Length: 354
Image (tube, rainbow, N blue to C red; front, side, top):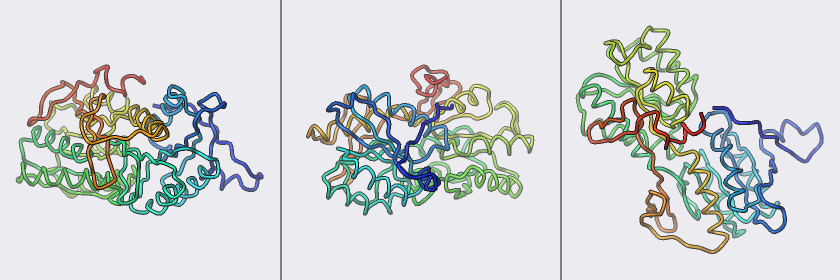
C-alpha cells in the first residue's frame, strides 16, 4: 500500500534543507483559502503502510469538512513534534491533531497549546497527562485480548508463542502487551509467552524472532503488535521452512495488528492467520471531525456514538472515542468467543485501497 508522495515546502535557504526535511511544516490547502478554519495535523511517521494510509486519507476528509490543512511530520521524534507544534502556533491554526508516540514526553507541548487555547485531538495514542479535546483511538487492550484468544483457540491452550512488542514508552505498546499477557495468564496458563521489545522496529523484531525460534523448538505462534514486523516475520519463517499452510503440522500461527492490504492478502494466501483491523480511515475522519467540533464550541459526553463506537471517560477532562477494530481471519469464524470478519470483507478499509 503506497501513497502518492507528499511535497514538503519549507521556508529557509538550501543549507537548511536537512533540518527542514526532518520536521518543518508542509502546507497543503484543503479549503478554499477564504475563511476556512485552518487546522494542523502532525503525521507521526511515514515509514509504515498503516501511517501512509492515514496520511493519504487526511486531506480528503479535511476537504469534506471545509478545513484548510497544514501538515508536518515528526518522524517518531517528540522533539520534532514539539517544534512542529510551535510552527502550527505561528501559523495561527485553530486546532491540532497529533499522534504522539512517546505519550509521557508530550505533556509540555500539550500545555503550550492549551495556554494558546488551541484544542488538540490525539490519534491512535493517548497522552499520559495533559489536556486534549478528544482521543480518537480503538481499544488497544482489546487488540491484545483478541490476539490472545485467537492463538489460544488455534493452539488448544498449549505451546509457546512470541509477542513482538512495540514501544513500551507508548500507551499502545503497554496496552497491547498487558492485555495479551493478562489474557494468557487467565485463560491459557499452560502456554508460554516470550515477550520481545522491538521499539516498533522491523529489523529488531526479525532478529529477536530468529533467536527465539533457534532457542525454543516448541514455538507455534507469533503476535505482532503492528504490521511493522510483517515482512521480517515472513522472511524468518520462510528461511526456516516454516512458511507453510495452516494444515501443515509445521505451521506457525501468526496474528498481526493494523489491517493493511498486505496483511489481508497474506491471510488469504495462508501466510499469516489473522489481524486486528485498526481503522486508518476513521482515525483521519474523526480526528478532523472532532477538531471542527472543537472550533465550533461543541462538547461531548461518555456514551454510544452514531458511528458504531463508544466515548469513554479515561480520567477527569479526557474523553476517548474508541472506534471499532475487528479481528480478521480467513474464514470469518469465532475464536473462544471473539468473532471475526473474513479477510475479503468489503467493509474493511484495507480492501477499499486495493
